[in-house]
Length: 94
Image 1: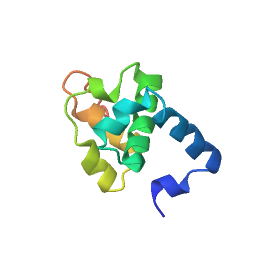
Image 2: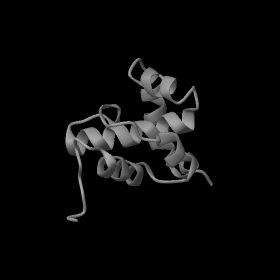
Image 3: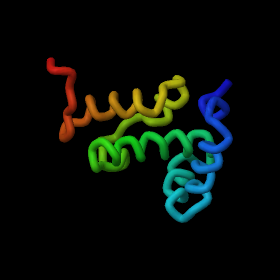
Image 4: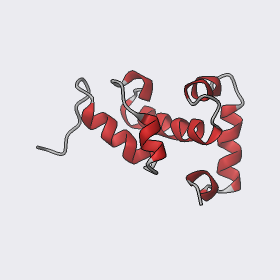
């Protein structure tokens, strides 16, 4: 079962509503119209915005597609991207 299929009908409907809006166009464009990947990006971006007042697109280049294809959860991929970002540089205390 894919990450998308694990979501409740209500959550999928909410994510689809955003993806079908003008705001969602950026995610769909970045994801080459792959709705599953676009939804995953949206979740990562909302999490990043809520916790750090940044967009994932503000971070240094990160291989979001590789993380998605590897089955990482959006929050895990976000943490790795933040740890690797030279400006944000969130580390585990090392």
